Length: 312
Image (cartoon, rainbow, N blue to C red):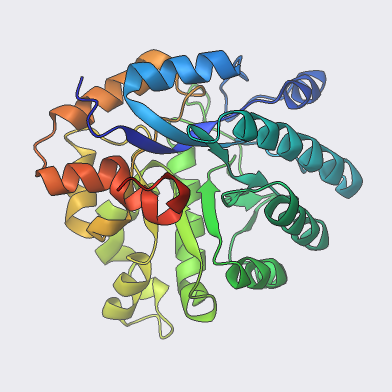
């Protein structure tokens, strides 16, 4: 496997023990996948095997808001302090995106401030929807304004659709892709980037269906509902990670659509088992890219978002 340059992974997960126990007590999974075991040692081992120099860790779905604001605030603080401790022990290799408490907006703002000002977060992770309310919801504007003042990196991760899954098709197989796509359209059509131009928003899994269907959905992303050029320009403002998306089928569409400075490497470990993470890393290494493209995707683009890991 090609391990030069060492990759920066912007889509790697962390499962703090207190969070895993909290979910287990409630019988919850992550989009149909069991909550995996996690440890610092296993994370670093996967990184070494996949040629990952540094990784930004994040809590995955279902997040911390299960209907009670006070519980969500308590759990967000716990997982962020745990994640910050891991990052502080491995500053050259590990960082983290802070977990917030949407739809509790005031709690989310308070936790973002604590995470940035006290815990050294590299950005925040937001679920595409919480209880059927999608990013771009007007009531969540105060949080976006706060994040904009900090030029925050916002990592968007899918969650369960506000609908029952199809029997036999786990939500992570297809529903996650639609969930991310819905959030992207809602953010774009609402003019999020015009109001908050300092935000750097990463869409998981190559943006779901966005690159493939961008021309179709572009008009719906415009102010008039008819302006394809405006809609496409808005969709191109997102960053796109390659978690489980570096196949020879997905990459041509993403490379044809996305701004080349906005494509990032992602492993999706440990919710993607090590064998799957390594499989997609190998597909990326085997795909015909120029040296400039490979460096940008492996780490150059991520160095802009996490400048403390910039080399040279």
